[in-house]
Image (tube, rainbow, N blue to C red; front, side, top):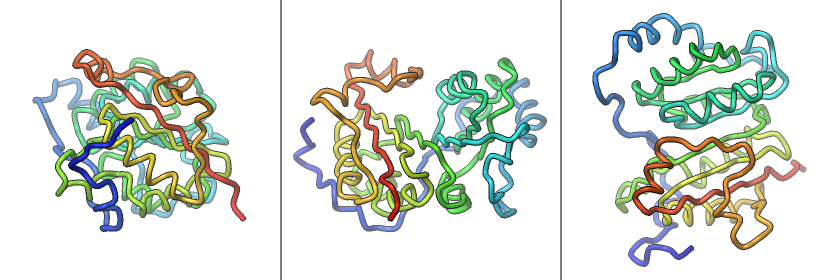
Length: 242
């Protein structure tokens, strides 16, 4: 991968993070979607006004031993597929876009998924709420690349959020990242490689071209490929503490 010659990936690294998503609503919701937001979402929504349970798996019924987090789940295809494939694992999804939340609720309803919890809002709020070493994995798939230089400070991947992920991930747990924007992929690789808490799991030069096992392609990824953009897949492992 080559970097954008007009961009400096470190220019905004130390600035304080802001909201990591853009618009909150798109097209008018269907009546059924509106009903799910009123009826199903309250039963699945995280209550971050209360302290997180010491054992994070107790958020789910029945309780689970491992919990994964997906930041910005879009239309929920990947999150729902992961939850269906691993019913013994709990999944937390964060999304600020109400249409995406509504679409995930459709997946939950249709598949009868009991192992999903949702935060409709900024992922930063959940990151601040979660207990240390409580997550078995974090997925960040096709985040907004905030392409303009003045907006780089709004990218999710910053030195501060990398440190937060290191706090929240259990030893040996993984942070998985996918993007179709070359500069954001290079930015992410640089930020994670300079963290002493993570190691890149790539074993071959072209590993970044291949999705990990069990990856579910989203509509956004299919669109990116149709438009000629090449996806990049990066996996980083949390090093043991101490």
